[in-house]
Picture 1: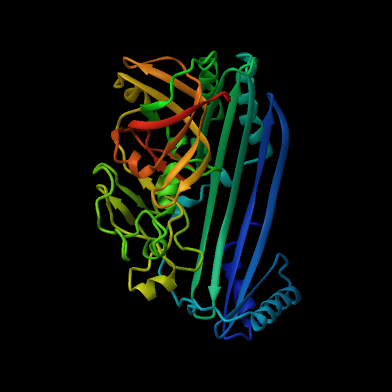
Picture 2: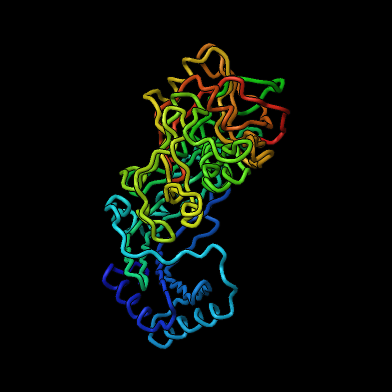
Length: 444
């Protein structure tokens, strides 16, 4: 039942609205089906599956609102869910930032957000992919831990003002860490796709295994400022904070206007329209783009359209809530769910060949904010850090703690490589000068 058709979903939502006695009512269905496999020490450790549809009802009386949820869809349950939302709404305080529900909207088509190959994944497919991965590590006498997760689902929305939305989505993500038996070497690789036909666990495992073998017996380098090549996985993480994701999360108009952001101006206002980065930096979002297709509507029903956020180093747009857009008199842009950083044609190997001296960073982790108004972050390298000399990887180096801001980083660009998909975004490897390492870490 987890993937309802548009007609099936909207039939349930129409029934929900027919039970409503509120001034305004909005109902949303989220459905998901999929599964996962986790491995450790070259053995499957857990597997799981999900198959669920969830209904969320928001009822409003004036500026008061209440929300209730359920996952059964008989008339009695739907009626109770609506009644519960209305009961909560009557007890709730008035919202000082109330905005009426949206009326009918026009959404772009995003057929590439759903792939039959991913929706049709079976337990056998997961076992075969992870099995091929573990076999490589067995043959190389390396130990691996991996996670494969796939999902297919839909989102449907309808409200009493005439808004109607529906879209199906699929996604597959895989990550793997490979270690040497003595624990001195570690490698990592990750990838995600809407279309699972592009996925190859064995190819990703070979990358992580090679890095693990290469990273044995790392040598210590003095902390300081170095030219670094940051792989895409070091710039955007699936499950942790990351430097580029921190930058995108900071493009919030309200935070900027209220003085809580690197985009805030002294005395009020924000830095929209100012050149803050290297002119090679262009970042945009487009939910209809084949490689990063995503929802064409936001959680509150606003259309997600192709939007340029940074163009040739200039901040072009900031996202905002409907309330703040109205109050500040600015464009009403929802936060993007995924984005694209334009790059060049150089591969990672090309970038290494063009480096006289530098450090290759596979991954950053345990990233934490230090100063939100300069976007200064700290964290650690891990799972494969290497010294480059005369265009070749010379030897592994011990991991570092870093202190760096994506603002400074994107003003110290030396080269931008070819973008690849990571975490639902298209991200290029970046070569950056004067990246700040503050201390050493003994972790691998």
